[in-house]
Image 1: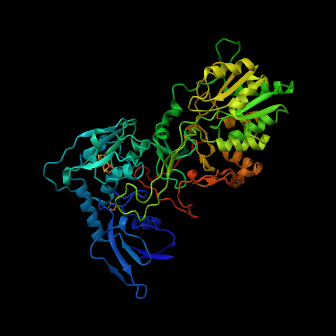
Image 2 (image 1 turned 30 degrees about the vertical axis):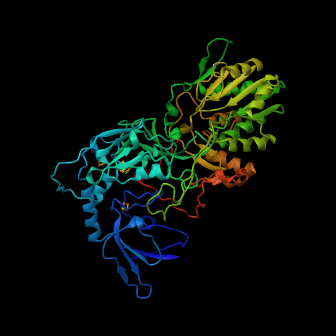
Image 3 (image 1 turned 90 degrees about the vertical axis):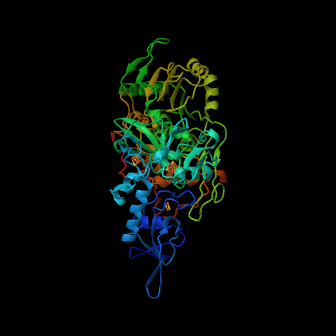
Length: 594
Ligand code: SF4
Ligand code: SF4
Ligand code: FES
């Protein structure tokens, strides 16, 4: 155990933790303000905002020997005997001077700046700055630049912390950004008029502590304080990055990364980030439909009527000895897959279950920062963690496969299932998909239609099969439902509902609950998860229906292969992630109940 003193009080830290003074103080509820330091980037100590009094405590006498000048907390290890003073007049005066210095050339843009409400300059000006401004010289006015199709640089708001520069050198390792010129003429710029062009580019907006780097896809769309934050999981690949889903007035406005050191660290990729519009896509199914006459238009029906008809039709076909294929896609949560598979298998002997289509694009892209590449500052506090964009563009193949394996001992892939359909083996096919990307072409849809007498589909978007199916049920998009996904590491993570389902739709868990004739409606995903954990041994870790904040690795589902590991040591028990607060203000997180 290391004993450190903060503002006169002794605290202990476990020996294995290598923290700087900012992290150690935060652990015990003491805030040291900072700008340029970021827990995943090397330390450059250039903003000087975190300077505090540092000393060494003599264990025998208890006396502290203070260093005469202030020292950057970001660069100071919190080791046994370290004493930190954050509340002295000397420290407070220093913070006032730094704020005055950083604001010398800063425009009064708050009313028109997207960062307002989650801005490091606003917060520290209010808490630690001064109202008086002594600068009378002419201000430097820098031009606004478009540094990528989605990122705008407002140079006159920049405080030259170089977080963005270090991100492109150390994490994306693409190095597009640099500091040009010197002194008060210094500016951030892209190299040789190129753009910030890498799959992680949007993260520079998140880690900019002020309103200098802004996302043009949401520019001036919402004020930060109107947004309500919900804990979500990205469904655009099998990494399962942790998201903050931010909504206002029934709409998702943006996705921001939510720190999970075991999965995505502080980042998300651009493909995930810019899929925030999935819940409002123009091609979403507007409701449930029935095909009354082949070749005619579908007729709109109420969701409850559609579920009742689905149950009737499948029951009749099974009772007459017909064979039914149930397809469960990798966008379904484990709870939905479990209840739907339970229902379908309860229909009789001639039920086959298959996995829905799994889309792959290219190969896994692994960003593997280490302690050296691209880094020029102090790296002693950095824990390098890989970030992986998976080729597998689905969030829950492993989870759905585990459910299928439980019910029929094997996993039949979509291709093999289609071959059986083409061979005329089935009288009915029911597909539960919910994919935000295209998953079926016209030829395949027609093949299914031509070989089966009854086709039903629950999905979120209009697809070629939706035009041909006998019964179409509109399901909820990923942000409109709660449930768990098992990512490529075998880690089960919970995504909470951020919006209620659109009118005319039902979450797939509700559809399965109605088909099962359950009395406990509306269904709770935690109840389904508990039943799943008590039924299928692979999910035993969640048999009480509770998922830890960082998720839980289901050992039986964990794939082999070091490339799937993000390189970080496992978080110790009681691990408290350090949130970089500029893009995630300490605000209560909300789950929608409906
Ligand atoms: S960067 Fe912050 S302080 Fe500056 S204008 Fe924007 S909101 Fe205001
Ligand atoms: S643009 Fe933002 S992140 Fe980059 S140096 Fe300026 S203030 Fe820092
Ligand atoms: S945060 Fe320590 S000097 Fe900038």
